[in-house]
Length: 382
Image (cartoon, rainbow, N blue to C red; front, side, top):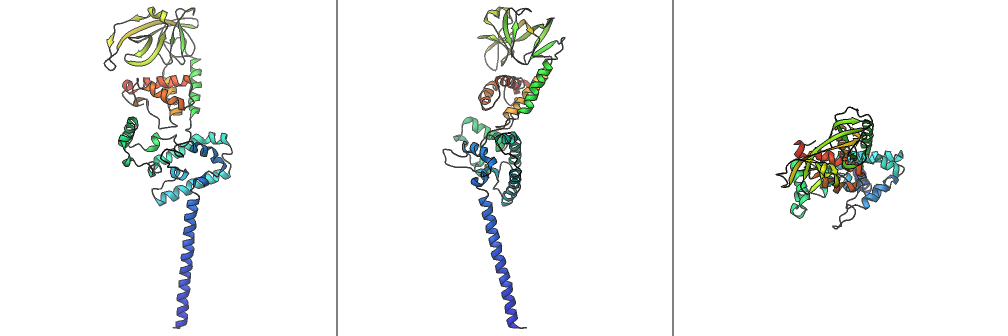
């Protein structure tokens, strides 16, 4: 064997290996640099379609807070629990975003708003599937000092830990404005109006879809009360477009003008004019064990105009459920009606509804749906 030729072959192999190593190192560095460069918030918001999401993020606590910790786009949208998950999520979602941008899928704010709900559902589903891996990069449940949290927050975090809920179940409208899925609710409201327009004239029970006046007689000369949505009325007579009705319920001592649907439950059926209280047929007061207050059965007879009335309460409950899903599911997972008691729901709705675009009529209907399907009335979550 020629020693000179053998030496040349070794040098050639070494040269190939060295060159390959350099190229591999360069490729690795380029890949690493590319991954880092395209994971910065500056890169993420460089697309025109990200202008609105960027402004929403800049107004959130993930941008500015008392701890001085800032969570950027990649921190929330790309999981760091494993290199594979990081690379796969970045490649798949990143390419989707690039293709969408190239196609001009969201050229302006109106287009973005039209897709907000769809995009939010995609992100929520992905975070739900990976147990909120991106949230847990900064928020470690095991390291939480529950005693330093508010009583309500600590209670919810304990419940989530015990039930297996994940972060995104409750924390949705954190960095971006929550969507409202109002299309179904709007269709349900339209359906209610259509049903009310065709309520049978011989209906034996009626349920208002809106607040309506009650009168002393069929001529509507004297208004004696207002009946509230979903309250049950039994029909006792008819005359043209008027219906004679009976409302039965309960009266709490000290609040005699209010007729409640159930004893001890503050589900308002009707509000009676002060000068019409003598028209009420009253029973005897008894003590409600849960509240310690005095309640008695009452009955009111009146006349109501045959409009905005249904012969069946179920469409009202369907509408209330739709409202709960449409307006309340943007900030957190939808809380079932059976999660709280009938007396707890009104204050909860009042505290949350200001964060939505729901009007007063929707708020009223949602409250009555939740109250009538509360855990102390149904015994189960619905």
